[in-house]
Length: 522
Image (cartoon, rainbow, N blue to C red; front, side, top):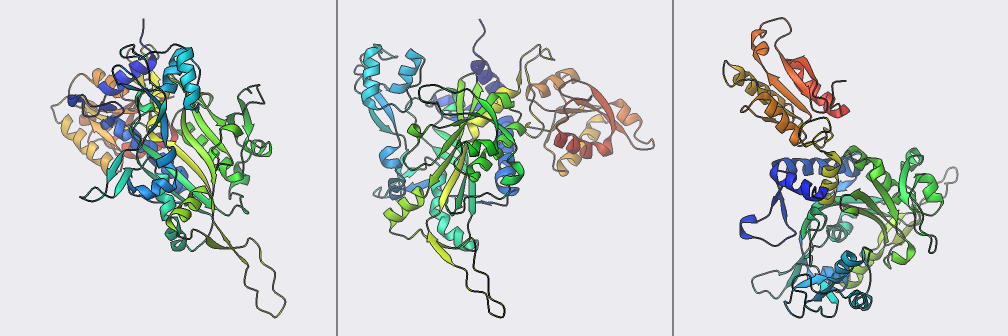
């Protein structure tokens, strides 16, 4: 019997250099993974694509904030009191487990969000024992998920590794607002590491103790919640999962952004626009549109400060997993920091319209308003997205090739091409090295391989999803002095077809094909 797809994929990810178990030789605890050469490149390309869509194209700001936060910051944000998971401890072996996970494994139903009393009742009703030693489980309680540390040698200034990147943006908001001309809206994003001391990390990259987030905080005047550019994309269609109608679950539906907004699925144009950007991102990463959806969170699941949450969920071999959350957080975070820090987080903004001036008289000063901005926050997990890209690109043996391979879009692939001299003699290797240097100078990420048969080198390139293979052969050398210069063979990954091109044109052609997503000759 074949292993589940996620188990096979994890084996391939480790053997092919996408992932490396962190501190493996010391039998380190779970929930930590390093990225190998191929994986680090793919992860970087995912981040670059997010940056292009969420920062560069709209002209938003990007910062990099500290990963260690003083305790008062996380008291204000609510993490010290509320950032916890329901945990039970075995009375015999003293191991600790997520109570909701134990119940989900036994009942095949979700127990997310249940209170300890409900979870205790569920454990008893389902006669669940310790998975390790079959001992009795103790009472369910809360376990805070943050990694504690301290600032300074004395250890008397408690702090935590940040559980999310967002708080750094909120802390920097007031200074950024002034630096950028004291105007709203103001959008600030960052990509960075976050830490959550999971009780029982599971499912590989899906639940880790150290991970990377891509987050954007869009600050705006709640009286002016329109979004520049929405008119141009309001007719775009996305797949949503509406909240249940009473006890009746609703089916997924493809709906225009404007219609979803009109029907109340999205609270404002800003959140709808962020959904459009995430839809563009996932489509460009090669994840089929029928494999992901935007789940509209029902009102009874919303945090008390939220006026609307939408989760991006992807169908994987683990089931449906949440990879991103878009939240309308109102003014909760800034107001909490104002309350706890005793610093004013109000800003002064010009009203949307001002009275016209009378002929011959100077224009009146525009009216101003004092307010604490509201925030829409798209927050995406890079590592979960990486796994979804990996699953979407995986092709088993028999699907076009005799080996397992990955059909990454060129924009995501670890390398755009491999450079292969047919032989390591007769000057072919020197020509290949010259081409390699030219490609890298042109800003293309390529790699070099000269050992093994050319067929095996093509196969190894397929195994990590490289779109193009460039072979320098004897014809390249023999026709070096002919008009137009020497040529090389370019092999396309998806169909294995080959094309002879001038060596001088290779950098331009590769860049052109990669941008167009061309991975087959036809």
